[in-house]
Length: 224
Image (tube, rainbow, N blue to C red; front, side, top):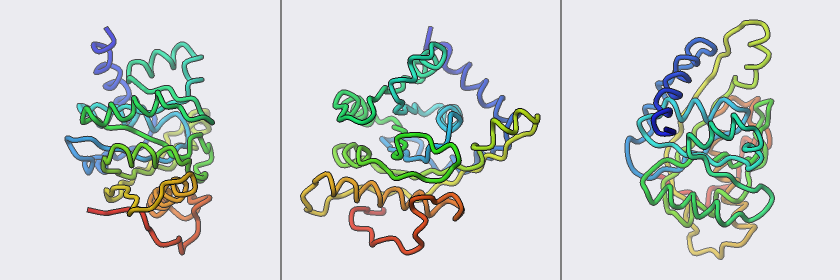
């Protein structure tokens, strides 16, 4: 039953996105059509994951979501439909990491928001080191995707206005340790380098914690 509903829900989201927002899905054509992939995205609100999952079909796209999401019955049903992976924030959730690696082993897309929580205003928060662990263990390529404008969605709906939702896709890369001992500090440095890739794609006013126009040299990213 759940698999039967997924195409219908995805279709409904695509139709709804044409009605409620201005979205050009053309940049998503840069997402590879096959093979394991980690999509790293900034996290503003509730729009990005449904839009990505719907517009990237027929590719299977699975995202991480805070376990508290399942406290809401409708959201829990929706995230179960997308086979989202519940994660306990603030702790080393090894079961969630194993599920993430299984997604990539299956050749599917894993969506990770390194910030770990919504910004609401669109300004980047500090990335969390968990994304580094998944990327290193899997060896999967990473593709940065950013979006902005969605932070205005709720206010625009109240005024019956459509929301301009902007998407931009960066260049793929892989995370490598270059022989360095991977400590907690190293993983945070790796996460920051990934976040700088997101920041570089965004307008300056959205770069938040990564507004530095002269970021440190990239030590752990390898571009194709």
